[in-house]
Amino acid sequence: MTLQDAEVKNDEKFILDQLQMAPNFMSESQQNQVPNNSNEDNFEELGMAELLAQHESETLETAKTVGSFILAKVVSIVESGALVDIGEKAEALIPRIEFGPNPPFAIGDSVPVLVSQGIRREDHLKVSWRAARDKMAWEQIVSAQEKKIPIHGKVKSETKGGLLFECDFGLVGFIPASQIDVRPSRDLKKWTGKEMSVYIMEYDVRKNNLVLSRKQWQSEVNLKLKTQTLTELKIGDVKTGVVTGITTFGAFVDIGGIEGLLHIGELEWGHTKKVGDVLRIGQEIKVKVIKFDAAKDKVSLSRRELLPHPWDGVEERFPAGSVVPGMVVSITDFGAFVEIAPQVEGLLHASEVSWKTNSINLKESLKVGQKLQVKVLGVNRQKEKISLSAKRVEANPWDTIEHIYPIGSRTKVLVTTLAPFGAFVKLKEGIEGLIHISDFSWTKRVKNPQDMIAAGQEIEAQVLEINKEKEKISFGLKQLKANPYETYSRGSKITGKVIQLMEAGAVVEIDSELEAFVPSTEITSEKFVKPQDLLQVGDMIEAKVIQVDAKERKLNVSIKQLDRDLQIAATKKYSDRAPRPNLGKLLDS
Image: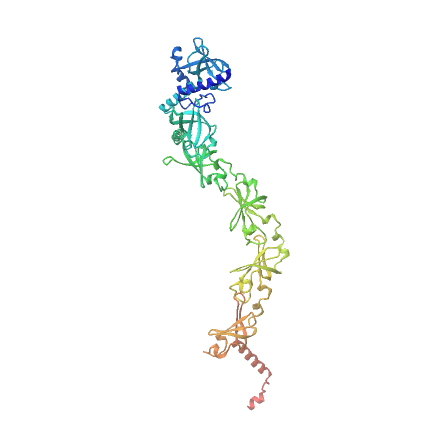
C-alpha cells in the first residue's frame, strides 16, 4: 500500500468516525456545495453566526475534545485538505474528501469545524467542516420548527412523488407533490431551480429525514394578500394576475390572494372558441376589475378592456365603397359573416352574394375559411356593424338591363322557384325576376302557379317593369296575348255555348278562355221562368253584351235584350218596305 492509498483509507475512516459522532451527518450526494445562507427579508431565519456564537465560549482545551465546535481560520490548502488555525498556534486538517477539488472557502476565511480526533505527534488534529455545518443546519431546522418560521432554499430536482429541496444552509429535504402548491401541480419538472420558502412539516435527525411544505407557506401568504387586496380593491382597478385555472367558460386569475373570474366573453374583443388557445396556466396577464362583491369575495375581471378595440378607426380604415379582402368565418340562413380585419367582422347578406339570384343556397355557395373580395356598403361604429357585398365587386348587370330587355319586350326565362304568390324566373344573365300570380291569365283566377307552370321549365314572358334602384324586374304571361275583355264592348253581339245552369242564370263559354254570364232576368221577358226551363247545357245561344269589367273579369250578356233588338230591327225593316196608303184608299175604307 502506498502512502497516498493510506491517506485515502484514513480519510474514509475519518468520515465513518464523523457518522458515528454525528448521526445527523448527510451523504456526499446531498452535500456538494457551500450553503448560500441568503434569507428573504420577509421571514426570520436562524443565522449561522448566531449558532456559532453559542459555541464561542468554549476554551481550546474544551474544543480539543472530540465532538466540540471551533471557529477556525483557513491557513492553507494542501493536497490532503485544508489546514486551519484552531488557536494557540495549533493547526488542524479538514480532509480533502469533504470538499473535493474545489474548496468552498479561501485562505483567510473563518469556518466552523467539529473536532473529530485528538492531537497526535505524527499528524495534525483532524476536524470536520462538513459535520459542523450539518449539525448546525439541523439546529436551524429545530429552531425554525419551534418558532414556526419558514426556511428558504431552491428546488434541486424532481423525484418520485415530489421534489428534492436544498435549504440555504445545506440540508436537502423532500416536498411531497401534494404540498407543492395550493392547487394540484401535475408538471413537477417546472419547479426545478426555483427558489422558494417552505414550512417544516416533520423531521428526524437520526434518519436524516426532512419533509417540507410550500403549500402551507403559500396559503399563509395568500391569506395575507387576500386580506390586503379585499381592503384596497375597487371597480376599475388594473391588476397583474396569474392564471390559476382554465375552464370552458373562462379562466380563474389570482390578483393577490383572491381569484377572480375572467369570463370567455371578456377575454378578447373577438369571438373566442377555446380559452386554452389564448391563455395557459401560470401565465401572467393584466386584467381590469369590472365587478366586485366584497361580501361574497367574488370578483369579475376583463382582459379585453385593456386591449385596443379592434373597431377603433374602422370607418377610416374601411370607408363605404372600398373593396377589401375577407374570409368567411360563419354561415347562417340569412347571410355569412366575413372577417375583414382581426376581430372585425361584417355581414354579407344572402342578397349580396351574387347578381344571379336572391334565393341562393349559402352553404353550397360559400365555405367557412373561404377567402373572397368584398365591397363595403356601410359602416356603423357605434353598433359595430359593417354591411358587405360580394356581387358588387363585379360589374352590375342592372346598369344595362333596360337596354337588353326594354319594357314590353318578350324573352325566354327559366322558372326557378314557385311560391303561393307567383313564380321566380331567371334571365340568361342570371338576374332573377317575378311573375305575379295575377299576371298568369286574363280570364282565369289562378290559385296555384303549379297548375300552369313547373320549376325548371323554360317559358316565354313579357317584361312588364324594371326598377334598377331596388333591383327588381317583373314579367307577365297573360300579356303575351291581347286582353279578351278589351275585344268586347257594351252592345256588341256574342255567340257561345251554355256550360252551366244555376238559379241566378247561365254561364256561357265564348271561346276557350273567355266566359260570359246570362242573369236569369236577361234570359226571357216571361216572368217566373227558371233558366232550366228554357236552356240546356250544350245549347248554342246568341246574346248582347250589357256589362264589361276587365279588372274584375266580368262579362255579362243578355238574350232578352238581343231578342228585343232583333224584333225592333225586324219591325223597322218591315215598316220601311211596306207602301204607304193614299187618301182615296183611306176614304174608301
